[in-house]
Length: 412
Image 1 (cartoon, rainbow, N blue to C red):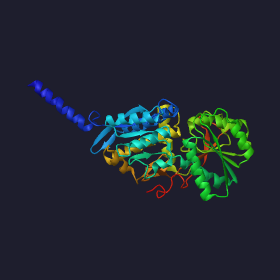
Image 2 (image 1 turned 90 degrees about the horizontal axis):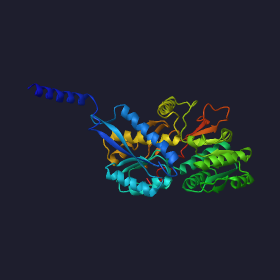
Image 3 (image 1 turned 90 degrees about the vertical axis):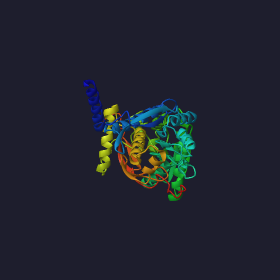
Image 4 (image 1 turned 180 degrees about the vertical axis):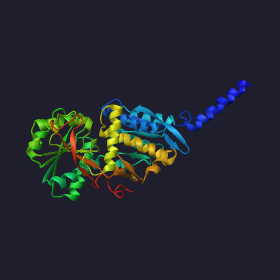
């Protein structure tokens, strides 16, 4: 009899505990994560994973996702696409085999584009947190539940061309870009803006192959052309080598250097004297001191402090977009009260929300419309820098309409 009473007491105690504590064993939401952990994209892929991990950790520390009257722990299932489209497709199928249909990922555009092709039948939701060619978001091309926190590389060219034309009022602009999808997309965007809005500006092009170790011949060609502004847009190690050689060959003395899009991970590899006087576009920056938006500054400061606590350094812009991708995916799950790809996607669409890029709203083509589309940063001199991550000062913010093409032009 005593044994029976003891067992009943234990069972009642378990029921009480279950009612006051979240039951992780019973409620877990699995989200797939796919970045380039190996291969050409590994340096960036690894910091992107830092971003998604922190977003999931913050939700779990608050008790998990609210799913109706229960709470669910977020569990990340991480896989490596090896910077290869065919591997990315195999990993996608592995996720589907494991009943995981919500995936956050994307380091290189060719991998993310391949994923779009695989889910055109609505088989899954993919949050791409890298830049992709704009054509992927056209109504006839985009998979129904394909979504991206960063959007299209064509927008980089449009925004930067618009800013350069308005700010410097040049007569001649030289596009100095890498000869692959990213550079071609940025050039397409820039030419569209110059042609339609600033037809009197002469626009020339200089293309360099990806992986160029010596940019001397290209820089000499640019110097001979005597442009008023050089719009550069290299990526990875090419960013570091190109900007170092621009400094060493004195191009900055002859013309204004505007670098379309740089991330902190690249900028810290460039000598400060080579960045001094260079104006750069940045998707995000960890120090917005001076902007008149208390809510956005607060959000940026809080994320920066959390990141420093977790990883010992401020967040890189590319990692922040991975963080945003996971944060928005989890918010969508909670709003939809479901892990169904269509329900999560539809829960996000058309909704206003606050982010570390300021007020934003999801467009029906799966891209966000951010108030602060691009931060304009001037490179700091060695004397001005407080630490190695203090690469520049925000001097302006691009808030024009060139981030995304009008929905009508996208076929919606």
